[in-house]
Image 1 (cartoon, protein in one colour):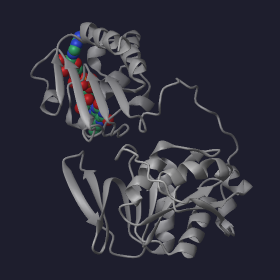
Image 2 (cartoon, rainbow, N blue to C red):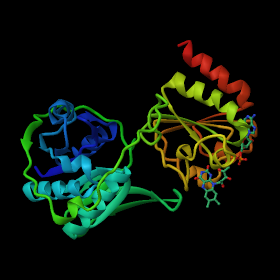
Image 3 (cartoon, rainbow, N blue to C red):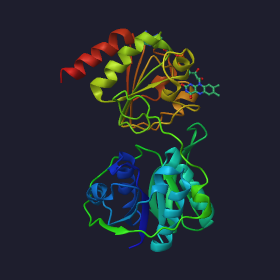
Length: 318
Ligand code: FAD
C-alpha cells in the first residue's frame, strides 16, 4: 500500500490534536508515516502509533528550534525522498502552511491549502475546500508531482487505529537557507486555560448583542462549563470588548468545531465564512428574523442575558 507522510505538530513530544485528525484522514489514502521533528519523538511515538502511524520518522537538531521553518522544510523534503509518498499532509497552521508551500515549490508539486475533507480518488487524493467566504464547496485533485495538502483543524474526529509506529531516524542535511532567519525570542501568550480557538472541539462566541466587554464573562462562563474556546464577532472585537485573536470570520479565524454556539451574533456572511462548516451550530438571538437562524441546528429566540446563564447552569448541573 502507498505511504502518506503526516507532519507532526507537537510541543516537546506532546502531539497536538490536528495531527491525530491528519492521521485519521491519511488512513483513507494509504499507510500513514509520521514525520516528527525536534525533541520528544519517544513520547510522541506511542500516540502516533495509536492513531495509525505505521512508522515514525524522526530527526532532532538545534536548527528546528533556533530558526524559522526552513530547516523543517529540509527535513520533510528528506522524508519525501526516503519514502516517495502518495501525498504529504500538514495541519493548516501558519507554520504548517508555510512549510507546505515551500515544500511544494521545491518538489514542483501542486498544493491545496485549508482542505476540510480528503478522500481517495482513482488518480490521487481528492480534497474538499470551502471557498469564497464559504459560498462554494470545491473538490480538487493535484495533477502534478507529489500532492501536498494542508487540512484545517477539526475537519474530522480523530479515530484510533493502532499500528506499529516504529521509530526510525531520518537523515537530514540542512541547506544554505536553513539558518537564514534566526528566532531571537519567544514570548508565550498568557494562558487563558482554554483550548486554542482553531483547534477547539467546542467554541462559544459572543457578538454585539453581548453589549460590553464586562458581559463577555457570561460567554466565558458558558465556554468554561463546556471546556470550550471563546470566539467573537468583528463587531465585538471592533468595539474593543474582546481581542482580535478571538475574531471568527472572513478577516478573523476559521473554526470548524463539533459545536459552535453564537450568542448575540446576527450571522452576517463574513461571520458565517469563519464558522459555517461547524458540525452543530446553536444560536441565541432575541430577533427571530436574524440570518444566523438560517444555518443553525438549534436556535433559541431569547435574551442572551437570560438564556446563556441558564444554559451554563444546566451544563454545570449535569
Ligand atoms: P450585529 O450584526 O449588530 O448583530 C448583533 C445581534 O445580536 C443581532 O442579531 C441582535 O438581534 C442580537 N442581540 C442584541 N441583543 C441581544 C440580546 N440581549 N440577546 C440576544 N441577542 C441579542 N464579521 C465577523 O464577525 N467576522 C469577520 O471576520 C468579519 N469580516 C468582515 C470583513 C469585511 C470586508 C466586512 C465588510 C465585514 C466583516 N465583518 C466580519 C462584519 C460583518 O459584516 C458584521 O458587521 C458583523 O459580523 C456583525 O457582528 P454581530 O453579529 O456581532 O453584530
